[in-house]
Length: 206
Image (cartoon, rainbow, N blue to C red; front, side):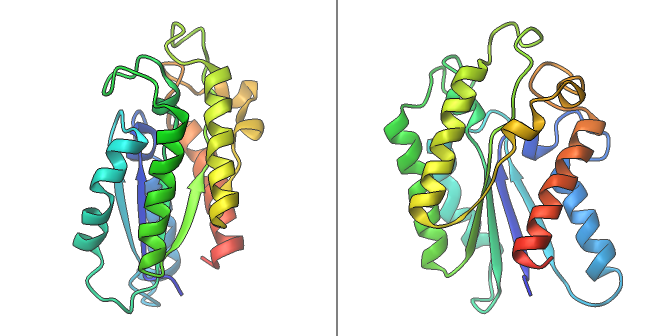
């Protein structure tokens, strides 16, 4: 049984535009209701998402974030990494540039290796499509799909789990939930959380 879930990511993981806190908060509520409130376990869920996050910057804080939150070396830990959309953006507001492919892949790989060094499980989250009209071309789906491919490639090489999202969410129903073309509203976060919880339940026995 998992003892801790640590979710690293960007503004969507952080929960922007969801009145209920985002898909990570919804995952935590699911865990609380199924285990913690029923007195069956004390499974902790940490949201370590930062708006605008990019993989190289995340990699710099990754180990210290793990060390601060996992005190008991016997804990069974699942690390979820949801990053890449901002890396695909040539004018990301934090880095002001697109993350080069080599650096992006190396950053993901380094984080996976750090987590594996602690014997933690790792799951990479696939990227989500944007509504390019609403984002005024700041986000480009061609680039997003390209970087989603990088995420999948790294997951396969590193032999960690990967949750594919792009194809299933490239629908009018989901795109209509994007408040600003990139961040889903509460309805979108609900759809997203259900997909992720279903995958984690099937693959990590949540």
